Image (cartoon, rainbow, N blue to C red; front, top):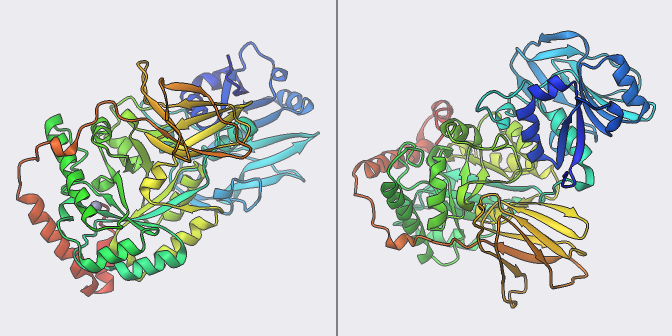
Length: 555
Ligand SMILES: [Zn+2]
């Protein structure tokens, strides 16, 4: 049973055995499968990965027109020096990485690649070619000088793709995507949002952020900025701020930033009752903002520091949260003891337990351009989170971010709630259309000619769960189907595409209003007063001091 996956042969078989975890994770990124070269001949495959092959094997691959990714080069690998991994600005390179450069530390094992006339150098590291595309007798092969190390126990694929570590995996991921071809998963166009953490709405400005200017800038650029506001703060909204947010609801929205914003408040292990009380209170406080008509509110939680205990997802979904923003690197460290898939944080669509959408967020740093490139390469939403201090020199950063992201082409700037509703991967199989959803409610466009929908919901177990398929015109009675991989024959025939909403209602929701509030504590209020005072003082400080302080803020 191959379920339509393209097969890639891996030689030698010991390399296949050694890289088992990595290859398994890659099958979540592209619709391929890997087969060991044990008991097989290279001629049995159309696509192969060859690690340090003999010349004879290379010649056979070339003679048979087999597309190959070849690791190895002249001599054995030696530990490379620190250097820049530079991708060529060529159409063979994924658009997200064309012309991009990544500074990497030393110690990466690297072979020497010989180049011949007609070779296309796709990437160099420290000036030496490390990824070369070669055409011989009509066969195309990629020669790669840096071989991925096997993933260790508990190590996730995403930990090998960071702003300072891309050389190991990019050629391999691009290769598997290319060979998966037309049968591979498709994603919606790039989606992006800038998040500003922490502002209260008490006054027309917060630190360096003036809401009127921010709105004007976001509208002019056509981008979207989400204000991650702390539920503790929602007791007061300045009327002018409410007017600005309402007038610019297409470009400014609000999301839930923790509850009290105490240190790691959503990442601590704590009793279920206490956690339920905190999360319900956060939502109740956030919902107070509905007193101000026209505000765009996302029931999306961004935990302070981007870290959340993975066990909290079930509760968040039951209370009616739509999604969580999370920082993959910190989330993985905080939740390493749990059995996550090895591809967590590296796939276009991750979904936390109980159908809570999981939207990876990037943290503002001097590497933000590299982080954006990696997120785009992984086909993930591009959500960059910063603070008011990042605008100490004006709103130029927003302009830089939007123009950098817009280079990807056809970018949709969306609120976090709208991003959550876009989280799906789709694949065509004959007249069937497979949708893997990443949230309890998503909107998608069923292409013309589709007669059968197959909806995959990774969080649903064998007991099944109701699913409602609603056509765009909203007049039709929703269809209810069950199961983790639910199949449904379409009753409509559309000449063009048809917009549908796929919803998985929670079977036993918890009403936040029914949950008793947590005990009152003085510390969150004292902390809030201190942080608010600090942030409002910033614009009056010398620029040198601001630059130094800015480097220390990461919540
Ligand atoms: Zn914060």
